[in-house]
Length: 306
Ligand code: FAD
Image (cartoon, rainbow, N blue to C red; front, side, top):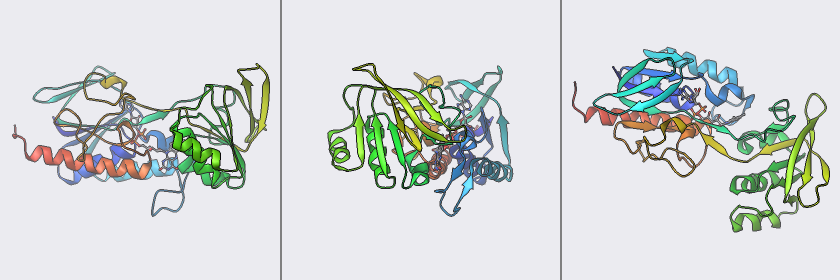
Protein backbone atom coordinates (compact mmCIF):
# COMPACT_ATOMS: atom_id res chain seq x y z
CA UNK A 1 0.00 0.00 0.00
CA UNK A 2 0.91 3.64 -0.37
CA UNK A 3 1.52 5.84 2.63
CA UNK A 4 0.19 8.92 0.84
CA UNK A 5 -2.19 8.55 -2.09
CA UNK A 6 -2.91 11.86 -3.80
CA UNK A 7 -6.06 12.14 -5.90
CA UNK A 8 -5.68 14.93 -8.47
CA UNK A 9 -2.75 16.09 -10.56
CA UNK A 10 -3.16 19.87 -10.55
CA UNK A 11 -0.87 22.26 -8.66
CA UNK A 12 -2.24 21.14 -5.27
CA UNK A 13 -1.74 17.44 -6.00
CA UNK A 14 1.70 17.89 -7.56
CA UNK A 15 2.89 19.95 -4.62
CA UNK A 16 1.47 17.45 -2.12
CA UNK A 17 3.17 14.53 -3.86
CA UNK A 18 6.57 16.23 -3.90
CA UNK A 19 6.33 17.12 -0.20
CA UNK A 20 5.29 13.55 0.67
CA UNK A 21 8.06 11.97 -1.44
CA UNK A 22 10.62 14.30 0.15
CA UNK A 23 9.61 12.83 3.52
CA UNK A 24 10.49 9.40 2.16
CA UNK A 25 6.85 8.31 2.13
CA UNK A 26 5.56 5.82 -0.48
CA UNK A 27 3.57 8.20 -2.64
CA UNK A 28 1.16 7.78 -5.52
CA UNK A 29 -0.87 10.24 -7.61
CA UNK A 30 -4.08 9.31 -9.38
CA UNK A 31 -5.17 11.96 -11.88
CA UNK A 32 -7.95 12.08 -14.37
CA UNK A 33 -5.82 14.53 -16.33
CA UNK A 34 -2.44 15.61 -15.01
CA UNK A 35 -2.13 19.41 -14.94
CA UNK A 36 -5.72 20.18 -14.02
CA UNK A 37 -7.06 23.66 -14.74
CA UNK A 38 -3.57 24.94 -15.45
CA UNK A 39 -3.48 22.84 -18.61
CA UNK A 40 -6.37 24.95 -19.94
CA UNK A 41 -4.82 28.28 -19.02
CA UNK A 42 -3.04 30.48 -21.51
CA UNK A 43 -1.14 33.29 -19.78
CA UNK A 44 -0.15 33.11 -16.10
CA UNK A 45 1.40 36.25 -14.63
CA UNK A 46 0.80 35.81 -10.90
CA UNK A 47 2.78 32.69 -10.11
CA UNK A 48 5.23 34.57 -7.96
CA UNK A 49 8.90 34.45 -9.01
CA UNK A 50 7.90 33.45 -12.56
CA UNK A 51 7.04 36.75 -14.24
CA UNK A 52 5.07 35.23 -17.07
CA UNK A 53 4.41 31.69 -18.21
CA UNK A 54 1.81 29.63 -19.99
CA UNK A 55 -0.39 26.83 -18.68
CA UNK A 56 1.08 23.95 -20.70
CA UNK A 57 4.61 25.09 -19.84
CA UNK A 58 3.84 25.21 -16.12
CA UNK A 59 2.23 21.75 -16.37
CA UNK A 60 5.37 20.36 -18.04
CA UNK A 61 7.47 21.86 -15.24
CA UNK A 62 5.15 20.42 -12.59
CA UNK A 63 5.37 16.98 -14.16
CA UNK A 64 9.16 17.14 -14.48
CA UNK A 65 9.45 18.19 -10.83
CA UNK A 66 7.23 15.31 -9.67
CA UNK A 67 9.23 12.89 -11.85
CA UNK A 68 12.37 13.90 -9.95
CA UNK A 69 11.01 11.90 -7.03
CA UNK A 70 9.81 8.34 -6.57
CA UNK A 71 6.16 9.08 -7.12
CA UNK A 72 3.92 6.56 -8.83
CA UNK A 73 1.90 8.64 -11.32
CA UNK A 74 -1.34 7.03 -12.48
CA UNK A 75 -2.56 9.45 -15.16
CA UNK A 76 -5.85 9.18 -17.06
CA UNK A 77 -7.41 7.38 -14.10
CA UNK A 78 -10.61 8.60 -12.54
CA UNK A 79 -11.42 7.93 -8.88
CA UNK A 80 -14.99 6.78 -8.27
CA UNK A 81 -15.21 6.14 -4.53
CA UNK A 82 -13.28 6.08 -1.29
CA UNK A 83 -13.72 3.52 1.49
CA UNK A 84 -12.36 3.86 5.02
CA UNK A 85 -10.85 1.00 6.96
CA UNK A 86 -7.49 0.12 8.44
CA UNK A 87 -6.28 1.11 4.99
CA UNK A 88 -8.22 3.47 2.75
CA UNK A 89 -9.39 1.96 -0.52
CA UNK A 90 -9.70 4.16 -3.60
CA UNK A 91 -11.73 2.62 -6.37
CA UNK A 92 -10.97 3.72 -9.93
CA UNK A 93 -13.19 3.78 -12.99
CA UNK A 94 -10.97 1.06 -14.48
CA UNK A 95 -12.08 -1.25 -11.66
CA UNK A 96 -8.70 -1.16 -9.89
CA UNK A 97 -8.61 -0.58 -6.13
CA UNK A 98 -5.64 1.25 -4.63
CA UNK A 99 -4.84 1.04 -0.94
CA UNK A 100 -3.15 3.66 1.16
CA UNK A 101 -2.61 4.66 4.78
CA UNK A 102 -3.58 8.27 4.06
CA UNK A 103 -5.43 9.91 1.19
CA UNK A 104 -5.01 13.46 -0.02
CA UNK A 105 -7.91 14.82 -2.05
CA UNK A 106 -6.90 17.48 -4.59
CA UNK A 107 -9.50 17.09 -7.31
CA UNK A 108 -9.93 20.81 -7.94
CA UNK A 109 -12.94 22.59 -9.33
CA UNK A 110 -14.47 23.76 -12.57
CA UNK A 111 -16.05 27.09 -13.49
CA UNK A 112 -19.76 26.94 -14.22
CA UNK A 113 -20.24 27.93 -17.83
CA UNK A 114 -23.07 29.95 -19.43
CA UNK A 115 -23.43 27.32 -22.14
CA UNK A 116 -24.29 29.85 -24.85
CA UNK A 117 -22.98 29.97 -28.44
CA UNK A 118 -19.55 31.60 -28.70
CA UNK A 119 -18.51 30.90 -25.11
CA UNK A 120 -16.28 27.93 -25.94
CA UNK A 121 -15.03 29.45 -29.20
CA UNK A 122 -13.80 32.60 -27.45
CA UNK A 123 -12.61 31.01 -24.20
CA UNK A 124 -9.21 32.63 -23.53
CA UNK A 125 -9.91 35.05 -26.38
CA UNK A 126 -12.00 37.45 -24.34
CA UNK A 127 -14.13 35.00 -22.39
CA UNK A 128 -12.52 34.71 -18.94
CA UNK A 129 -13.43 33.20 -15.59
CA UNK A 130 -10.81 34.59 -13.22
CA UNK A 131 -10.58 38.37 -12.62
CA UNK A 132 -7.43 38.00 -10.45
CA UNK A 133 -5.77 36.20 -13.36
CA UNK A 134 -7.00 37.98 -16.45
CA UNK A 135 -8.26 41.38 -15.27
CA UNK A 136 -5.04 43.25 -16.19
CA UNK A 137 -5.32 41.97 -19.78
CA UNK A 138 -8.34 44.26 -20.24
CA UNK A 139 -6.78 47.46 -18.97
CA UNK A 140 -8.60 50.47 -20.43
CA UNK A 141 -11.23 48.33 -22.17
CA UNK A 142 -14.94 47.64 -21.74
CA UNK A 143 -15.89 44.33 -20.15
CA UNK A 144 -18.97 42.56 -18.82
CA UNK A 145 -19.36 40.46 -15.71
CA UNK A 146 -22.00 37.76 -15.89
CA UNK A 147 -23.58 37.11 -12.49
CA UNK A 148 -24.65 39.41 -9.68
CA UNK A 149 -23.72 37.23 -6.72
CA UNK A 150 -20.83 38.01 -4.38
CA UNK A 151 -18.19 36.80 -6.82
CA UNK A 152 -19.75 38.75 -9.70
CA UNK A 153 -19.97 42.03 -7.82
CA UNK A 154 -16.51 41.56 -6.28
CA UNK A 155 -15.20 40.97 -9.80
CA UNK A 156 -16.95 44.11 -11.06
CA UNK A 157 -15.41 46.25 -8.29
CA UNK A 158 -11.99 44.71 -8.88
CA UNK A 159 -12.20 45.17 -12.66
CA UNK A 160 -13.60 48.71 -12.45
CA UNK A 161 -10.24 49.81 -11.02
CA UNK A 162 -8.42 48.48 -14.07
CA UNK A 163 -10.73 48.59 -17.07
CA UNK A 164 -12.62 51.49 -18.63
CA UNK A 165 -16.12 50.24 -17.95
CA UNK A 166 -17.92 47.22 -16.49
CA UNK A 167 -21.44 46.05 -17.32
CA UNK A 168 -22.87 43.53 -14.86
CA UNK A 169 -25.57 41.26 -16.24
CA UNK A 170 -27.75 39.41 -13.73
CA UNK A 171 -30.40 36.90 -14.82
CA UNK A 172 -32.61 37.50 -11.77
CA UNK A 173 -34.58 40.65 -10.94
CA UNK A 174 -32.37 41.26 -7.89
CA UNK A 175 -28.68 40.93 -7.08
CA UNK A 176 -27.72 38.28 -4.54
CA UNK A 177 -24.46 39.97 -3.54
CA UNK A 178 -24.04 41.38 -0.01
CA UNK A 179 -25.44 44.90 0.40
CA UNK A 180 -22.07 46.40 1.19
CA UNK A 181 -20.70 45.11 -2.13
CA UNK A 182 -23.72 46.36 -4.06
CA UNK A 183 -23.36 49.77 -2.45
CA UNK A 184 -19.69 49.93 -3.32
CA UNK A 185 -20.36 48.86 -6.92
CA UNK A 186 -23.12 51.44 -7.34
CA UNK A 187 -20.84 54.15 -5.96
CA UNK A 188 -18.27 53.53 -8.68
CA UNK A 189 -18.78 55.68 -11.74
CA UNK A 190 -17.92 53.06 -14.33
CA UNK A 191 -20.15 50.10 -13.39
CA UNK A 192 -23.61 49.57 -14.92
CA UNK A 193 -25.83 46.86 -13.52
CA UNK A 194 -28.51 45.29 -15.68
CA UNK A 195 -30.92 42.83 -14.06
CA UNK A 196 -33.30 40.36 -15.71
CA UNK A 197 -30.71 39.95 -18.44
CA UNK A 198 -30.34 36.56 -20.06
CA UNK A 199 -27.12 36.33 -22.04
CA UNK A 200 -27.85 34.48 -25.27
CA UNK A 201 -24.66 34.78 -27.36
CA UNK A 202 -21.01 35.71 -27.12
CA UNK A 203 -20.10 37.53 -30.31
CA UNK A 204 -16.69 37.98 -31.90
CA UNK A 205 -14.80 38.74 -35.06
CA UNK A 206 -13.45 35.21 -35.43
CA UNK A 207 -10.30 36.13 -33.45
CA UNK A 208 -11.57 37.76 -30.27
CA UNK A 209 -14.73 38.68 -28.39
CA UNK A 210 -16.40 41.89 -29.53
CA UNK A 211 -19.56 41.77 -27.44
CA UNK A 212 -22.57 39.83 -26.30
CA UNK A 213 -26.30 39.65 -26.90
CA UNK A 214 -28.82 39.45 -24.11
CA UNK A 215 -32.57 39.30 -23.80
CA UNK A 216 -34.28 41.63 -21.36
CA UNK A 217 -36.56 39.15 -19.59
CA UNK A 218 -38.97 41.93 -18.60
CA UNK A 219 -39.63 43.16 -22.15
CA UNK A 220 -38.34 40.23 -24.22
CA UNK A 221 -36.24 42.66 -26.25
CA UNK A 222 -32.80 41.68 -27.48
CA UNK A 223 -29.82 43.98 -26.95
CA UNK A 224 -26.20 43.95 -28.03
CA UNK A 225 -23.34 45.24 -25.84
CA UNK A 226 -19.93 45.96 -27.42
CA UNK A 227 -17.14 44.57 -25.23
CA UNK A 228 -13.53 43.40 -25.25
CA UNK A 229 -14.01 40.85 -22.47
CA UNK A 230 -16.61 38.82 -20.62
CA UNK A 231 -15.98 37.51 -17.10
CA UNK A 232 -18.30 34.62 -16.27
CA UNK A 233 -18.96 34.57 -12.52
CA UNK A 234 -21.81 32.16 -12.04
CA UNK A 235 -20.10 29.72 -9.73
CA UNK A 236 -17.09 27.49 -9.16
CA UNK A 237 -18.09 23.87 -8.76
CA UNK A 238 -15.81 21.66 -6.64
CA UNK A 239 -15.07 18.18 -8.06
CA UNK A 240 -16.29 16.47 -4.91
CA UNK A 241 -19.51 14.80 -6.09
CA UNK A 242 -17.88 11.38 -5.84
CA UNK A 243 -17.19 12.00 -2.12
CA UNK A 244 -20.77 12.82 -1.09
CA UNK A 245 -21.51 11.34 2.31
CA UNK A 246 -17.87 10.42 2.86
CA UNK A 247 -16.18 13.64 4.00
CA UNK A 248 -17.90 16.74 5.36
CA UNK A 249 -18.47 19.46 2.77
CA UNK A 250 -19.95 22.95 2.80
CA UNK A 251 -23.41 23.53 1.26
CA UNK A 252 -21.51 24.34 -1.94
CA UNK A 253 -19.74 20.99 -1.91
CA UNK A 254 -16.32 22.26 -0.84
CA UNK A 255 -14.42 19.81 1.37
CA UNK A 256 -14.00 21.27 4.85
CA UNK A 257 -10.39 21.21 6.08
CA UNK A 258 -8.62 22.39 9.20
CA UNK A 259 -5.31 24.24 9.46
CA UNK A 260 -3.39 21.05 8.61
CA UNK A 261 -5.55 20.21 5.63
CA UNK A 262 -7.32 17.40 7.50
CA UNK A 263 -10.92 16.59 6.56
CA UNK A 264 -13.63 15.20 8.84
CA UNK A 265 -11.99 11.75 8.53
CA UNK A 266 -8.63 11.30 10.29
CA UNK A 267 -6.08 10.26 7.68
CA UNK A 268 -7.95 11.94 4.82
CA UNK A 269 -6.56 15.32 3.84
CA UNK A 270 -7.57 17.77 1.12
CA UNK A 271 -6.04 20.74 -0.65
CA UNK A 272 -6.61 23.28 -3.39
CA UNK A 273 -9.77 24.37 -5.16
CA UNK A 274 -11.82 21.37 -3.97
CA UNK A 275 -11.62 22.66 -0.38
CA UNK A 276 -13.26 25.54 1.46
CA UNK A 277 -10.14 27.69 1.04
CA UNK A 278 -11.16 31.32 0.75
CA UNK A 279 -9.38 31.98 -2.56
CA UNK A 280 -8.65 29.77 -5.54
CA UNK A 281 -5.28 30.36 -7.19
CA UNK A 282 -2.30 28.29 -8.31
CA UNK A 283 0.04 29.60 -5.64
CA UNK A 284 -2.59 29.02 -2.96
CA UNK A 285 -3.34 25.50 -4.20
CA UNK A 286 0.37 24.66 -4.10
CA UNK A 287 0.69 26.03 -0.57
CA UNK A 288 -2.29 24.08 0.65
CA UNK A 289 -0.97 20.93 -1.05
CA UNK A 290 2.23 21.30 0.93
CA UNK A 291 0.25 21.91 4.13
CA UNK A 292 -1.96 18.85 3.64
CA UNK A 293 1.05 16.70 2.82
CA UNK A 294 2.85 17.76 5.98
CA UNK A 295 -0.44 17.13 7.80
CA UNK A 296 -0.49 13.59 6.41
CA UNK A 297 3.13 13.10 7.50
CA UNK A 298 2.25 14.28 11.01
CA UNK A 299 -0.67 11.86 11.06
CA UNK A 300 1.48 8.93 9.88
CA UNK A 301 4.22 9.41 12.47
CA UNK A 302 1.53 9.32 15.15
CA UNK A 303 -0.15 6.16 13.81
CA UNK A 304 0.76 2.51 14.33
CA UNK A 305 3.12 1.05 11.80
CA UNK A 306 1.83 -2.10 10.08
P1 FAD B 1 -7.09 21.58 -10.50
O1 FAD B 1 -6.08 22.40 -11.21
O2 FAD B 1 -8.53 21.74 -10.86
O3 FAD B 1 -6.68 20.06 -10.66
C1 FAD B 1 -7.55 19.02 -10.28
C2 FAD B 1 -6.95 17.68 -10.65
O4 FAD B 1 -7.80 16.63 -10.16
C3 FAD B 1 -6.82 17.42 -12.15
O5 FAD B 1 -5.65 16.66 -12.39
C4 FAD B 1 -8.06 16.59 -12.46
O6 FAD B 1 -7.94 15.79 -13.63
C5 FAD B 1 -8.12 15.73 -11.21
N1 FAD B 1 -9.41 15.11 -10.90
C6 FAD B 1 -10.63 15.68 -10.76
N2 FAD B 1 -11.56 14.76 -10.42
C7 FAD B 1 -10.90 13.57 -10.35
C8 FAD B 1 -11.29 12.23 -10.03
N3 FAD B 1 -12.54 11.90 -9.69
N4 FAD B 1 -10.34 11.26 -10.07
C9 FAD B 1 -9.06 11.55 -10.39
N5 FAD B 1 -8.63 12.79 -10.67
C10 FAD B 1 -9.54 13.79 -10.65
N6 FAD B 1 -4.78 30.72 -11.07
C11 FAD B 1 -3.71 31.52 -10.94
O7 FAD B 1 -3.11 31.56 -9.88
N7 FAD B 1 -3.29 32.29 -12.00
C12 FAD B 1 -3.89 32.28 -13.22
O8 FAD B 1 -3.49 33.00 -14.15
C13 FAD B 1 -5.02 31.42 -13.39
N8 FAD B 1 -5.69 31.38 -14.56
C14 FAD B 1 -6.72 30.50 -14.71
C15 FAD B 1 -7.34 30.41 -15.96
C16 FAD B 1 -8.34 29.51 -16.18
C17 FAD B 1 -8.98 29.39 -17.56
C18 FAD B 1 -8.78 28.65 -15.11
C19 FAD B 1 -9.86 27.62 -15.35
C20 FAD B 1 -8.20 28.77 -13.85
C21 FAD B 1 -7.16 29.69 -13.64
N9 FAD B 1 -6.53 29.82 -12.39
C22 FAD B 1 -5.45 30.64 -12.27
C23 FAD B 1 -6.97 29.04 -11.22
C24 FAD B 1 -6.04 27.83 -10.98
O9 FAD B 1 -5.89 27.13 -12.20
C25 FAD B 1 -6.59 26.92 -9.89
O10 FAD B 1 -6.74 27.65 -8.69
C26 FAD B 1 -5.66 25.73 -9.62
O11 FAD B 1 -5.41 25.00 -10.80
C27 FAD B 1 -6.25 24.80 -8.59
O12 FAD B 1 -5.42 23.71 -8.43
P2 FAD B 1 -5.94 22.32 -7.88
O13 FAD B 1 -4.75 21.42 -7.92
O14 FAD B 1 -6.65 22.51 -6.61
O15 FAD B 1 -7.06 21.82 -8.91
